[in-house]
Amino acid sequence: MGGHLSVGADRRARFEEVFDAAYVPVQRYVRRRGGGDETDDVVADTFMVVWRRLDDVPSEAVVPWCLGAARRCLANQRRSTKRRALLRDRVAREPAPVHDDSGDADLVAALARLDDEQRELLRLSVWECFGAGEIAVVLGITPNAVSIRLHRARRELAGLLGAGKNSDGGGHSSVDTRDRKEER
Image (cartoon, rainbow, N blue to C red):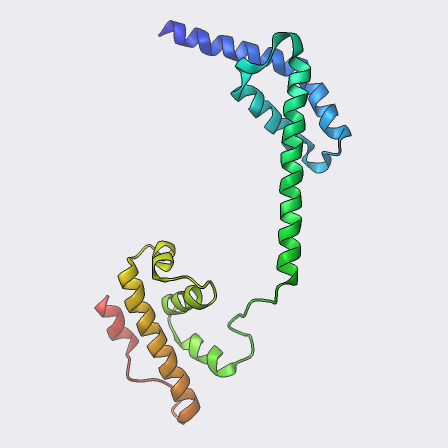
């Protein structure tokens, strides 16, 4: 077991040597190439690579090897920044998502009368376009349970919408929420 500790200590000592030799040059390299606010993150990523690939770092070219790793980490950071900017632009161009307060007063009122679980089921189905299997993963229930509960939620919503538009009573009384919860 002592040999194992020696290998760990040797690896740590080697990393410290590489770190001491390359930290300042790597930091300057990243800063000069426009690392900006993310300079520290890129430098940290670089030394994570160094740690993982410590056996690949040539003793005679520690700083150049580390600068090569920094160059690739900086490129990864730039790609990530570009992807985030593209996503932000795409989301900004998309129409705003429909929320409960979107304008159809009857729908808003009917949704408000459903319980939280029914609203979530309907949102996952309609807004996210998820099928029963995907909804089951989100909610941690079986696809069969999703199908049953979604059917009930749709039936209740339809009843609430029908009752709201066609009667003075303003409510759906054929499905009692308390009874439904006891069935579960």
